[in-house]
Length: 288
Image 1 (cartoon, rainbow, N blue to C red):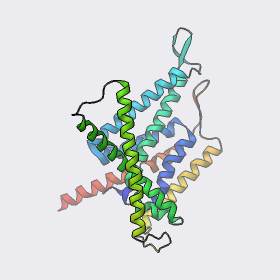
Image 2 (cartoon, rainbow, N blue to C red):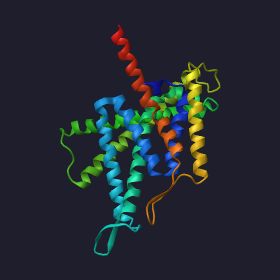
Image 3 (cartoon, one colour):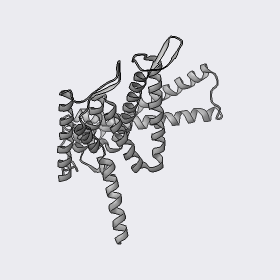
Image 4 (cartoon, rainbow, N blue to C red):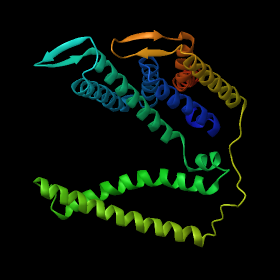
């Protein structure tokens, strides 16, 4: 059992708000690295060997963004090397690495968010606006459907051509546009069918809904903890106690270690919960 996926929707909302908002606002390499480390650890214990692909993509993203930023941003005083009159600096490289780490962590957490949140949870969270909840949940459902359908259209087109891939830039562009046109036609047709189906079934956004979710003690405790950590970190940031300078010279101006440690511990909750449940399962198996 993956504890994060079993939590109350409100608890999940507070956790992912903490996970995504703090690193994006702070833009601090310490918090970005803490977020990415926690995301990778949870992915490893959850997916096992499948997590290697995530690790590879994360490493490539960090490396490419770091090198790309260094290649086009030439500010900073610590020169690593020069090509003719162009200087490549350590500050721009580290800033690019930080942006890559931040991007990789956000993408991984969003992937985990997609696993945890289904249409029922979305409708529960946005029950104050049923129409908005319906639109949002339908969008979340359409994305994987369209990705799958795009793959099916591509395979069908290749089968019609005897499995031969288009050669030349012109043929590739035409092949892609034809596939995209077919996907748009499918999406429009699917939308009409969904609308007619909902109308035939008497959909009423004002109808009374029964929810299976109930806030338990652990949810209340976690909501308080996540809120306290976020509030404390934001207060420290607002007071100027969390600041990393990238240019012209890179250095840590101020760093609130309590805020960083508390944030990292909160981020590690999914990882720790999985380890704890695995340990309990093994202990029960030994006793049995």
